[in-house]
Image 1 (tube, rainbow, N blue to C red):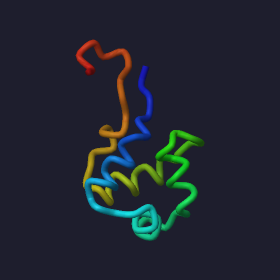
Image 2 (spheres, rainbow, N blue to C red; image 1 turned 180 degrees about the vertical axis):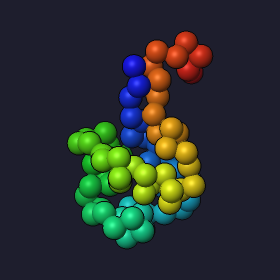
Image 3 (cartoon, rainbow, N blue to C red; image 1 turned 60 degrees about the horizontal axis):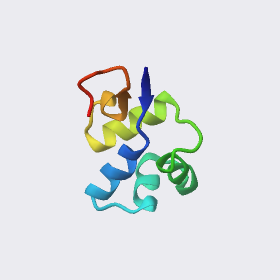
Length: 73
């Protein structure tokens, strides 16, 4: 089973030294929406996830956890 890891958005934002407002403006999404994503509420479209992964220079697969992977820590 593969699940979306909402914590990655906050992690990458904090590592980049960005505020919610900075990320919201960069990808043209409301601060409230990004806050909900970071807190695991709601859902995220593939398009928005692609925008976030491109913004942070990450592979989109970085945002997923394979719960069936025995090697997953």
